[in-house]
Image (cartoon, rainbow, N blue to C red):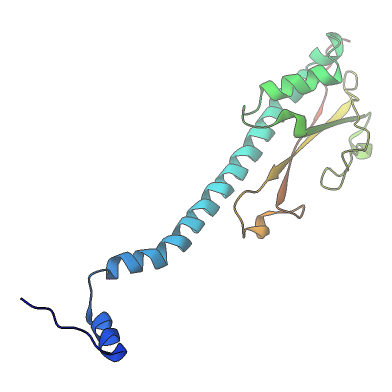
Length: 177
């Protein structure tokens, strides 16, 4: 069978408009990019939430060492405390990017720590674990670099960074030290 030779652009466009062979592929191509972008945003958001929970759990577990007097009586230093905190959080979190600040007070009304959302990396960190029955505030922060473009609403520090803050406030037990 001989094929007809297409001679004009009008005939070519008409024939193209009537064909349905690749319609599904074209429709998928139009929908796939927004779909996968939305899927990546969901994964990024889940990663941020999971990391925030992991950081909070790590702070809660490690702060218990202060509350029970183990840090004070065993002479645990600031660097050793941070090392213990790193063991209590998820392994994918870069521990060198975690900042820990611990402050104490004799009364609940006067306890105050730095605002971890605005504190700079150059600001000195506090490591005041307190004594028996002192009020203690343990704070940790971690900067999560967002990797999916176009989700600036999730960034709270600008330039694609989400700052995660975890904390624990408690009164030390009367551990006898």
